[in-house]
Image (cartoon, rainbow, N blue to C red; front, side):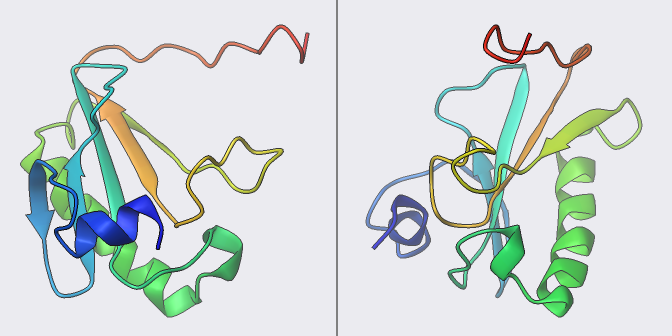
Amino acid sequence: MCIFCKIINKEIPSKPILEDDNFLAFHDINPTRKVHALVIPKAHYSSFEDTPSEIMNSMSEFIKKVTKELKVDKTGYRMITNIGNDGGQEVPHLHFHIIGGEKVGRLVRDKEDA
């Protein structure tokens, strides 16, 4: 069972932000900005590529509620999902990072990409 499934099952503690029957948003344990949340579906999907479109539609609406709760909906935020090894995905469970609360800035290329 992946770490996010354990969080959903309350086997690992988290700091929840918002939850409904299908999704959970919680604070990242290693935030990169003032606001850094993770949003996950409660059903296990390995990545965006494996997720049905209807789940993504519902998740989009849930994420909008999360950004309002975090008070970044008006000021702006970055939403990121990593897909597969080459995309930098570390946990094989669909998740979106919501980061903001301050200027995020532009993405900087890794030295390996330069």
